[in-house]
Image 1 (cartoon, chains in turn green, brown, cyan, blue):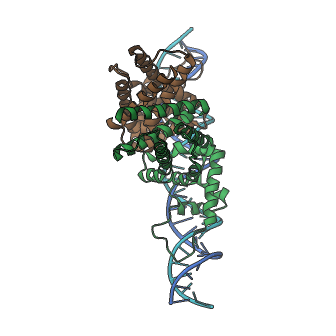
Image 2 (image 1 turned 90 degrees about the vertical axis):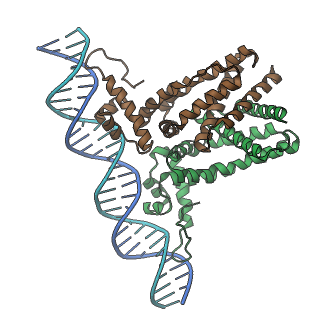
Amino acid sequence: MCSRTNRSSRTGRPRSTEADTAILEATRAALVELGWSKLTMGDVAGRAGVAKTTLYRRWANKSELVVDAVAVLFDELELPDLGSLQADIENVVLQFAALLERPETKTALMAVVAESTRDEPLRERIRASIVDRQKRLVLEGRMRAQRRGELPADRDPVAVDATDDLIFDVIAGAVVHRALVSAEPVDEPWVARLSALLVGGLGAAAAAGG
Amino acid sequence: MCSRTNRSSRTGRPRSTEADTAILEATRAALVELGWSKLTMGDVAGRAGVAKTTLYRRWANKSELVVDAVAVLFDELELPDLGSLQADIENVVLQFAALLERPETKTALMAVVAESTRDEPLRERIRASIVDRQKRLVLEGRMRAQRRGELPADRDPVAVDATDDLIFDVIAGAVVHRALVSAEPVDEPWVARLSALLVGGLGAAAAAGG
DNA sequence: AGAGTTACGCTACGACCTGTAGCGAAAGGC
DNA sequence: GCCTTTCGCTACAGGTCGTAGCGTAACTCT
């Protein structure tokens, strides 16, 4: 979670976990009020009732702090079994859209991704804290559809991995692009169209490839 | 292109177009060398051989300047007729991926989108200068596929518009997500999978609905 | 209990960036 | 030639960054 120095020493005064949670909460509040670009370390420290130096002892810069602050929000996503692949997709896409509507995530997600194009450790942190955590949803949805018989059983495990990755990029990318770039609503009609496109495409691929 | 004050006055000293082009070129160079976050107005002014005040006379802030600087790069995309919908899609997606590989666009695109979540005029500028310009590609590709008989002719024009928008968000979103978030290569195998998914999905929708 | 180690809050600081103001000079239109 | 606008330059106030140094607090081990 936080960037504790290599070895977690057993001696000395331990870091305050209250400070940790207060800082992350203050960061989210500052994102809501100020947005990414006007959020400053000093402001967050003030809100959290903590010295600015305490922030720098835990996070090297704003980007890493914000990644940790918003990462927890992405763990709320769930994939209840609604009986069909299309219904499962629609449900999780709407959850994801609701998450992207929140001002904290809306202003922060693109910013840290932009920063990560020049910061390999940050990219790894984003991947570990946010992106990879959500791939489980694709995996679970695909396996469930296979159990239902909506998709054929695995043949080539490499191809399956590639398809899982593709679906993940398509769904996450399309929703983010719709919400943040096109700036149009991710509502039921649009989600239904997207889900139909995916289910149709996967079905066609299965019919063609075996 | 540049944010000239409302009425283009016919009297007085005209703005230097050399300065305009020098500034935009310097901005792209600075993006390559420094990236978005370390790019400063003073640095750009120095590179362009121009006073900092001249920048502020044309652009209100860094975001607007960078949008104009990278917008022109997105006009290079073309859609040659390769004989099939899938081939056309694969070709344009690879072009788009190559564009996103350039350090100028890679570091700038996400950053200005992030900024635009709290800046409506900036969002409008991005839409007008970059996003909407590329929708022509979807329109052209779809009509061409209809002429070939790969897709059915239009029934409901509203549904056609919605599908065009969907395809645009799916393609652009998936490529951006793959390239910048997943940070994995947008190469031929991946592009072939994406194109097959789209063509299959569109075909299935046509078979079902039309 | 005492010694050692680490985290904390606080203050101060140099370096940097922002965005604006004021100036005289340059470059056009009338 | 007069008017208007832009230009380069300098200077500036305001704000942020990230670090250093200090004394104090909290916890562990002997």
